[in-house]
Length: 299
Ligand SMILES: Nc1nc2c(ncn2[C@@H]2O[C@H](COP(=O)(O)OP(=O)(O)OP(=O)(O)O)[C@@H](O)[C@H]2O)c(=O)[nH]1
Ligand SMILES: [Mg+2]
Image 1 (tube, rainbow, N blue to C red):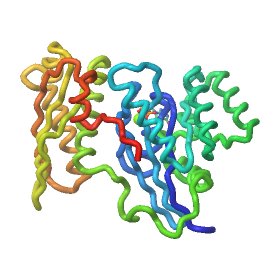
Image 2 (cartoon, helix red, strand yellow):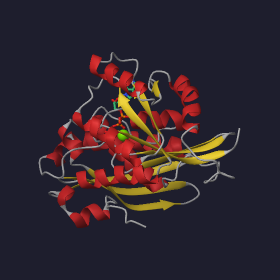
Image 3 (cartoon, helix red, strand yellow):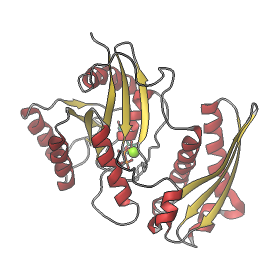
């Protein structure tokens, strides 16, 4: 078996289960997961180094139709993944009915001429007939279709998928990244995503869409990591909800994030969180840039 190394892009609709799949493959909570669509904003890289190959997974934001606010950025992330990946795993939620948007994405993947497979995630859930029909149709066209349930059976998912992923990446004389690392995300980026995740956990549906996290300072020494961050909301009335009575909500978000980061980083973490109202920040180009939501330049 020749050694291989390469990039595999996860594409799919929002909520398909891409980030859950990534986490189960790298065996770490790397990409944030929630039941709300559009959870992933920036593409997250996960790396698995095995004897036969190094697999570099790119977890893209779910594809969307709308062209306002953050959406053009999210779309450009999808395009970037399609371009950078050696192969694609189209992730389809077993419980999702195939929409026009999904069919468009499939056409888009086909026209890229990259090798691709279809991973039907959440296979523990009942699939509507339309989803089963789509799977049969893809199989007829010669596409490999794998059904997995990363949340329910992560071990089984892992072992069954690597063989498929191996077929998507090219031969390489050596790994492309240090085999000790499981991501290229920095601790600072991970901290930002973990704060965002806890906001998703504790807040009602409408708020996380307009919520951003800015890490103002990230100071590391031998004993402690000090993180100073702002949680940005778009509306005045979101601020008291985020802070909660007597600061209780912000405290819960802060404590849970800190515990998770301490476990991940193996060191004490001090976390200072503030809430700021930035009206329409998702439409403010300068601000989007500051938070890293900017289209990557063509190289
Ligand atoms: N029952 C079941 N639910 C799952 C499984 N995998 C993921 N989910 C749930 O599906 C929802 C969406 O999962 P994500 O991994 O965040 O989906 P995503 O495709 O990354 O979504 P975006 O980032 O919004 O594009 C979450 O509520 C998960 O808990 C699974 O194997 N079984
Ligand atoms: Mg995601």
